[in-house]
Length: 232
Image (cartoon, rainbow, N blue to C red):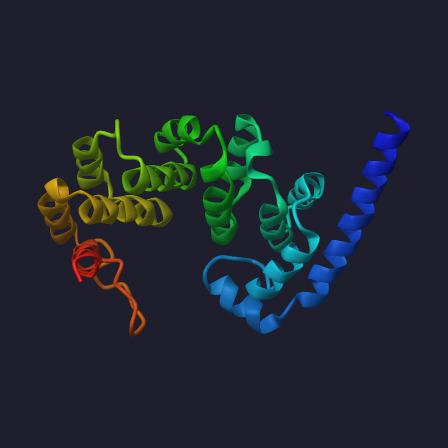
């Protein structure tokens, strides 16, 4: 290892210690109690976490070391200060498999994988993965394509899979498939009637508690409301 590389490594290690200490100071028991209800084992207010990330700016080496700590708050911060295009395909595959906290998984897919040049290759690999959490990442990437780059997608085929598998899918995979169903119905008028019919028949998330002023994740309600807004 060169002297320069050794010095850079030492600087990063010092920063990791400092950042972990700062995250510990930001820990709030009330925030942790709320987050744990959603499966996220951290107690850092996300606004304060974003403020810390803004101060640190993009630092890929630091991001990688923070990820290695296996601490949920540190991983969320790592995602925010990383350089999405810098990750190799196998790195992202390993990271998604290691991201068990829902918020870490969600941010990793949305803030990093979607901006990475390997995203389409990973979408195809993950969608058929036997691990439902990994598969949910593949479906999230498919939903992104349904909305922004549907050329080449077999939308009718996607609806076939959703119709056959969504009802009995584990929670996170079911949620991701339901989002894809809604997105197809919202964005593609030629498939809307079938998307609505699938949602009505399967009744997935029909009774999901929805706060006042928010749109229900029940696909028929979601599709109808978003289409209405498009035509206002």
